[in-house]
Length: 372
Ligand SMILES: NC(=O)c1ccc[n+]([C@@H]2O[C@H](COP(=O)([O-])OP(=O)(O)OC[C@H]3O[C@@H](n4cnc5c(N)ncnc54)[C@H](O)[C@@H]3O)[C@@H](O)[C@H]2O)c1
Ligand SMILES: O=C(O)C(=O)C[C@@H](O)[C@H](O)[C@H](O)COP(=O)(O)O
Ligand SMILES: [Zn+2]
Image (cartoon, rainbow, N blue to C red; front, side):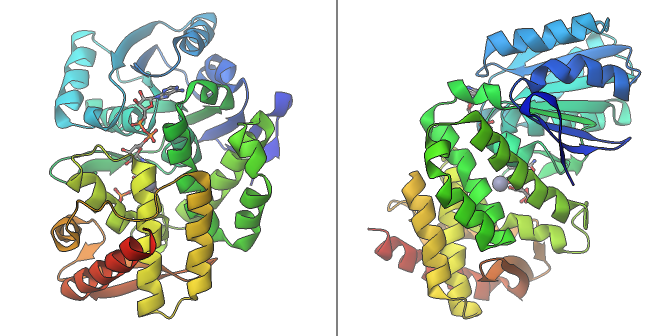
């Protein structure tokens, strides 16, 4: 699935459709990749204002060296960017600049900018190619691949399409400036992928905790690579989430998206996912008889990283969990929930919405009481 490239970078995928490269300094490949995957008459860079400017300079220089004209705009980073207003703003700007259909849109930033800019690429002139240069750990290890683009509308990711980037350049060098909380937030999705994949990856994470805490580039490159390998193997089986397999990647997200909405999108996505993994894990012990020690193993790893593992005390579970009625895994009056039978054995469980609400609310209370 992946091979080592030069300078410590890994090529996760290098087909005629998609190039996914992970490693320190990978940002310098963007110009060469644009030439290889083009031809593109124009490049439009949509940059996250919170991402490092110095490395953005390297990206723009690489595009200039490739001799491709570039248009540049900036968005505020963070969840507040994931709105239709931002989408209309970008569509209008691109139209005003006469951006042609053979343009490449480059999203440079966190997952929120990537989701939003990816949706703009998917819909401008019925779709142009795009590339993503993820600059947070969460975006590198998860958001950059799989092709899910979306903005929020009343609930999480309600407006979006599947539109995979042609080029993904995950340059570990960007992580040096990432605030601690954002870095830790990204580890939640890597733990999710490990819980899905199996104990070997969880053991690797625990065994390399020091390198992760110190943000060792080699450790980080491997952690991102392993995370993407897990995600891409599932996406390759069910890209549009029609067959069901891909719902497995939504582990922890039924509760997570409800928490993000209830907190007005102020709770970091990874923090919400960590809490969701614990609450939905407890629900799995109740619904499937999943081993309590497996869920405790995941909970204690999340907690040792510095992630929250109990719902915020100020939220009412039933009120918060009402949001699952607008979850995209809902089918009629039922919801399909990914759950762990045990570590490494995720299954999809269909249950009535009311049953799911009662089950998750009870699991929420147990997580809250054990998390104190
Ligand atoms: N499409 C997918 O498959 C997928 C997968 C996982 C998550 N997501 C989405 O991704 C979003 C979360 O992404 P995120 O965790 O990257 O958060 P984010 O995009 O909100 O970024 C967090 C903050 O970090 C700043 N930032 C970005 N890069 C930085 C850097 N190198 N140094 C310092 N600051 C930097 C941003 O400006 C922002 O303020 C959520 O909306 C989630 O739904 C999508
Ligand atoms: O790629 C997927 O599929 C995922 O579920 C990855 C999630 O980590 C990510 O947060 C995704 O955006 C959630 O998808 P959604 O379909 O629940 O909006
Ligand atoms: Zn997620």
